[in-house]
Length: 449
Ligand code: SF4
Ligand code: SF4
Image (cartoon, rainbow, N blue to C red; front, side, top):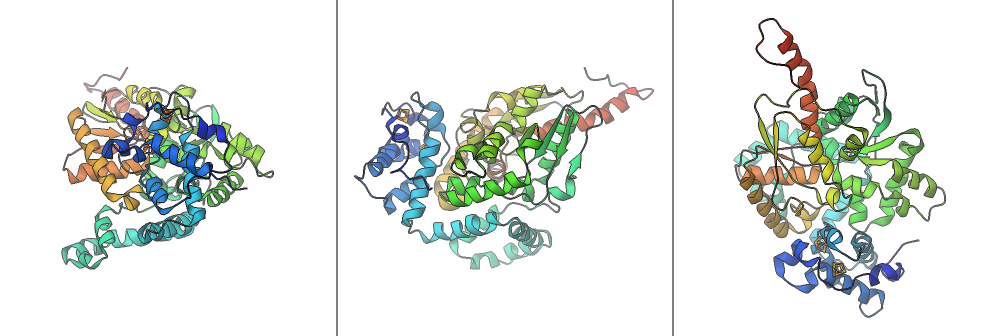
């Protein structure tokens, strides 16, 4: 059964007491100062629809498209309003009412949600094509000769933003089953993600290495489907359910101590399969078990008692700042753990980033559907990063990673973006070489503490 604003538990809608505590935390309200662009305004619109006083219209669709779904309002709300549920239900109603008349939005939705992210093989094929275009020099040639000017305006704007696709995907870097050198403390399944798999498969390798270094036996099942996060976030709830069932079939939750995600946006959705499949008698029980086993990598490492690396990740002392992915901090309430891990790293100083939990503008496909607002948020984020003087921005979501890296590159800031587990993995890898060098006769380096 499809949940709609008219059938949703009315208590969820009634919870908003119009106090306005969420307003200063909302990036779209901050941008316009208009009530309708605020969480409180949007909830009022949803309630009017539930009460039958308002139809689901194109204006409502525009309003909900402008909302980032960043959930900062949910963290700020003293009444515990579940904005995530309201947001997904509203977007689902918009889809069902077929009122989104923007041709651009419809095109991107069809290409991404209905086609590429429903078929891992199509996504991989598209990734390989893009890689071919980038690695053979065609991309550089097209830019040099001005061929890209022939593209439609939207594609012309997006072309330089296309992420660099990796030469090899996760299945080529991480074996289906890997065992730690020492005693096994836990058995985990590693989720490789979609964008993470195409663009940052090295982060999946780093995640596996960090898990192995902490005594975890790691299974990385092949041909993993998309988790459905983008679909749920954009109102395609039935597709999200289909993908959840496929993932549960591929990775039985009863077989693992934990199912580990290293992408904040995916993890936030992945840990709610129980409610997504609550009305499916064939999957409801396993979906609830899945939720119990689903862990963000940073949360899992801290709970397990992450081993402090005996070496620094780099030769020289390094300053790192941390950007919080919205769906990690607001969706999963994971904020302390990444900082705990970063503070474990020898030779690394953590400087706090102003507005670390303010959205960077990535927000799923927001850069495609709301490019102007996405760009403003990115510039704000890059400006804050510059004030920290950090050499590295750590962040744990591929969307944020790509968005911030592009902003830093455009600003020629000379700052790198890395996942916190990549910093840990670099430190563990250097343990062997650093310790070996220290123990060589005549070496002046002291062993790390
Ligand atoms: S999800 Fe983000 S953009 Fe949307 S209403 Fe809440 S704070 Fe504002
Ligand atoms: S903080 Fe919560 S209760 Fe207050 S206006 Fe915002 S959503 Fe409503």
